[in-house]
Length: 311
Length: 261
Image 1 (cartoon, rainbow over the protein chains, first blue to last red):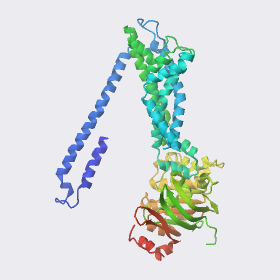
Image 2 (image 1 turned 90 degrees about the vertical axis):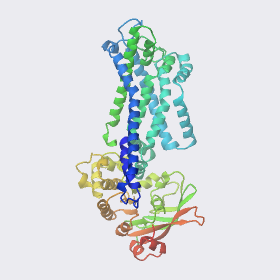
Image 3 (image 1 turned 60 degrees about the vertical axis):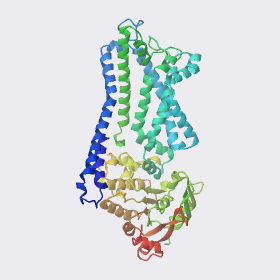
Image 4 (image 1 turned 120 degrees about the vertical axis):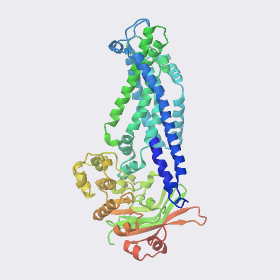
């Protein structure tokens, strides 16, 4: 942080100046402190610039999605399924919204508890043991696996025998989310101060009591953030869903054996077709997906900060 | 002196991995006394105090040899659950470490996890009174414990420890992070607490040890001839007045008179 830098530098200069310097008074040693001030300002400017540059694409994306999506985003878009032809105006993405909600929620219900328990194992039980190291290694590998491979795996394992469906889509999303949840939760759990755990043990708490009553609540805000990153990532996945849920114009009626629309896949289909009506729906769909992730994140933040004492 | 000791420590040695941290500690701790553990940094004071409630178990690779008898029962025996030990032997740490919960929940924590059946509100009040904190917080029991001052937090930690109804309280430099006013409050509190509890305190502060304790154990660091390993030993254990006025061992004399450490 630039502020921390500027606070640290003058103090460092004062402390670093030898008491017996030729000038006698360390405050008069202008040459050293001027060089430091220049460095400090340069570092500050560089960091501000870097932060601004990072913000540019984010703001452009938000602006573009909003500008292109808002004209089509109306009540009909939110409540009607996709029309049969891309040429047709009207209709909406409610089939995709419902499909995405079902698949993301189902994937979250499976992967978040599993991932959290896995992270608790790594931090509190496995520690530096062989099994823990193996789990960590493969979690890292899994995080880097292209999502289309996950889609192919689920396609082979589940779609070929049972057909497309919400469950297959959710399975692929859960596989993508799991390593993210494990690794981000592990980092958050590691940040819980040892003093807090010791306080709990010293009061006669067992291992599980300490984890459930002290460690998890203390890490809750961070756990929520990491988990939401995984949810957002899953909500935006397209490739695995093409292979596992495919798409449909109707609202889904069965969880297995029925091709199911999702927002990202509908956006993909709309964006790659030549007709303006379909493209406009894709922009509105992109805005809808963005807002959906935003709502998820806000809800999670509110839920985890309800107990303010933990902050 | 006639009373049965709360603790009997026999030939205690502690090592972390292959490194010996402490050895040859033998002492008896009488109930309802304040025992100070003093000595230079790195001499194993914290290691020793953590043997009384098996907190060393939490550090992987720790090995404890010898015996620590608590009312005659070896707490390192195979069939002893460290959780049970810690319910009887409370601990207060160097840095105040209240949970980020309300004041009330901090005090109630130990009781709740131990399945306390009585009235929690009464227990909270009794414990806070016992830690001389009640009058300062009675109107704000649901406020965050983190909003308290350092000295108040440390007394809250004491209240939290006595709420579990232990018979011994370990204090690992409980006042070293506090200002002099808060320190003197803790010291006064210790004098009240010793009517009901055995108190073992680690302190760096010689004046504090002299002021508060009844008996003092002086630990000192020994180094092997090659200078490659160092460990703590118990040099002297006696009445505090004797340790500070007429120590038997020259190393004790040198240390308490400030010639090193």
